[in-house]
Image: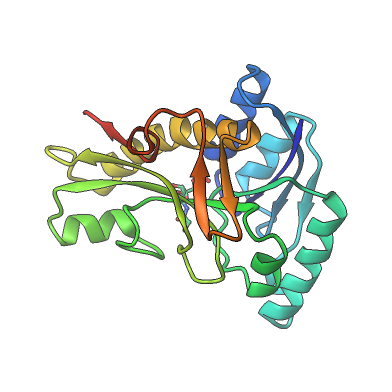
Length: 217
Ligand code: GAR
């Protein structure tokens, strides 16, 4: 069983999808802790409902990003995670953490990276009259919403043209893609090869099938 730590800042619907897949026996892993920088995050309640260990590290209580990250790093080390999942964690991690856990941290982001790192991705897609939108799952580097891509899922926007509808669609995709990727990381079908600096896929059909799922509306 892989030891999974989830970091989040808000609603935690992706955490819930991961929990549901673990409970259904789809993921060979156990969530050993849920950590939030936001004491009000609904995701903490979801974790408590499942009797998962929760920790709040409120970034506002630290005098600098370095100080916050030093405390977070210490906490993460104490948990000996195989995988750290950023599920709506709205903080940039410094290289202290990303180097220590190189190839062990993954993030989900609501855009087709490298398009639109950062916030308000749905509004940017609307403003730019994009024809496609989607999600990206990637290994984490110290750059915002960057790092080697593991998987992307795209859909044609067509009549889904409000922020709310885009967000709803994105969440539906996230809740199936993220557990799918985590399942395959726990099976070691997806891993980061440090020497080759490459994501390696195994037993997953063609890389195209794995990395780019198309979603029809
Ligand atoms: C998700 O849509 C995720 O892609 C996004 O935050 C949302 C969290 O939803 N992450 C980022 O924007 C990271 N840059 P949730 O709290 O309901 O899981």
